[in-house]
Length: 432
Image (cartoon, rainbow, N blue to C red; front, side):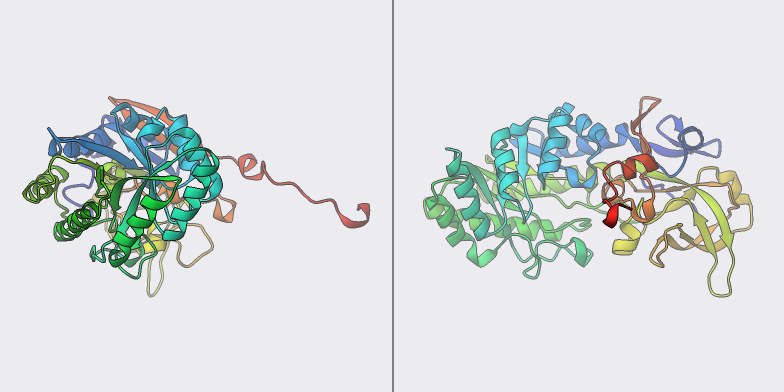
């Protein structure tokens, strides 16, 4: 069944019964570059970014792309060219930002487990801010910065105990989550940060989860954050910026998250009413910028009928696109040629070649397919290729970026030689 509208429209659309991304026929790309294959639309990413920019018109706001969603250098370069900063969670991600031409002075370093080496790397690069996630991290960061003769700019990530009403694996703002400082410990933690010699307090941060499709959790977190800002500043500690994180969801299966521009206009109205409208704001969108910009193309290898289930076995697998196996996530799966819809449809579980029962891309999907047909797994721009692996010694897919009718390979397909390059056989005992 083909969803209407397609997640990713208008850039993703059928034309003469063939599926296109922008002006590129996806079947042609699959045949040219092989499958599995990721294809991304630059126009979709720019349109998603523009919605945020409209919502923030006339305001002091810095948009920091949460690059864990998709860390392809081509994607980073596109957002850097639009003036975006970046939200990173590792030293490797910082290296990617720099390789893509991003400005380190617009980088926020989040994450609960920063190492001393990563702290030094970020301080040497001159990043904008560390989002500190524990009291122990404050002490270590101050020590590292002091040893370099520096003061690290810090924003403390607050855990406001707000239910984002999303999957428990991607909820980050409840007391039971590993992220951030507990709401009731926030003021004392800021007082400790202000007293440490290697730190300079610059902001406050909050991120309550991912794939949020309702407005209420954002409003609840906003109110709690502003209460904390008032309390912290009343204690004599200035807050230069407020970072509201990200988490806005996308349409996977008829989901209806609020539009970015409309959501932020409502949040800004409340910010004004509380007397904080002139503050520098930071946000960290990830999935909402890239999720529906990407598709994963795959070929049907075999059809395997059974008494209880029918299986459509494809050449993409859980190592290529892990979200269904990890989160039981839904991705629409559609044919690249919808003329096949005229065939008799069958209900299939769409599965890959990996040797795990959890290797599935879609369950109970009505498809009219035969071996050799090409399918697109939709909404695959975020947390798909970025979370991929080489499990079962399967090389990772190529990635293609389409823009203004042209398609360019931005990540070549890995080879078996790539997988073996960093390994070596040990010397055998006895000189055998």
